[in-house]
Image 1: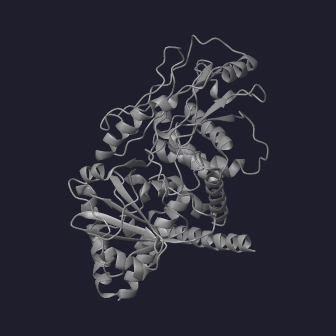
Image 2 (image 1 turned 90 degrees about the horizontal axis):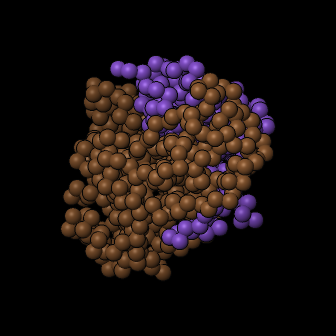
Image 3 (image 1 turned 180 degrees about the vertical axis):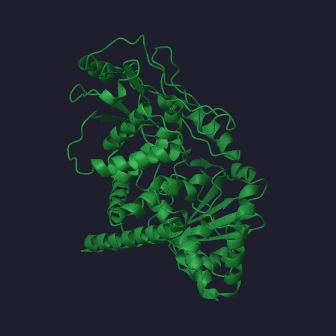
Length: 356
Length: 169
């Protein structure tokens, strides 16, 4: 029997094989243990590569929002862009991805209208209508005053940074609501505009500007009761250990979880165990159905992935030493669970047995 | 179906283009300039099939722009506003930036094609779209991704181990 090649395995994991090809592969995998191991390895490479690529999005954490001052020096008109009513508005994407391990969702871009009466923040509208967050049309600002770069710099620096952060509650809440729906939604945290008028830049809104992929809501500390409510009545915990902290995260930030739903993360810290986190989630029905195929092969080789670097935002600052964490993920009664720690596979399996 | 306006294209695709360019170049300012150039070209010649076209142009610009050492265009100064909710400790920032630099070095070890395919996949492109954008046969995408992912991870692990050794000394 012909063994599965790497390309086929990755195509399978990317759900790019035709139904016939899938059936053929599954039939082979059902009788070939080495290929099942290769599949597990492929899955690890895929997950690790995803995480590494995301780590390239180097932005400050969402809570710390840069404001941008546009300096007077070094302006150069962009002739290619001036062929449009002599003005072009550049809208810059908003928000940040938070930290390594975050998968940036599609992010919205909000173009500001060049008038002073612009509301500072636009929370995402209903997912069905604006799957990538609300985007306002870019319009050439015929009524814009031309400003010299010097006055621009002055204006930009003198004006107080807007309180974008005051608005974070709204996008976060809306984002949670949106995340619970099936569609991934981009989130906005503010708006800003830079306009070029005949080549000279004009900052017509003295609002903070940020760029990069939009953030997922930051992990939020919650109580155990809230966690139970989120999970629909029951929470799984490690028998015999006291939870130190419970957080609510977006599924997008947790490898292996349904990105459209939230994840409950329980932190444990014990002298003999170090830091252990237990993630759990009730995945959406469509996600669960899609995962069915892979699940059949998961049991053949327990998926313990070795993480290249700390993936959880632990309450304590983790030392620079390159200690590796491992994650053991499994499903139980429709709940997706993942244990992460620096313990050995055997001890992780022991802990897993204590999860009730 | 009406052709999307440039405003619509911008709203829809600029974030993804910018994100990919930042990952590809490691330079947010340069990425912004390139992203703006992509849409300037779209203004000049609105594409019929926007997504592959925009991303292909973006990747081409990176390749062409590669040797240009001096960045032209806007230079932005970033001023930070602190949040009362949650500040990142300096060593966390350091770690995160270090890690990104390490990933970048690992990514640089891939071939141009492997790297592009990987970044397009990370933007949510399916195999058909990657093939259209990168000019490859669809049948080759799985193999390319497999190789790219494996090489990136192995390169990173090797570099990370090197760094670990160095730190230990």
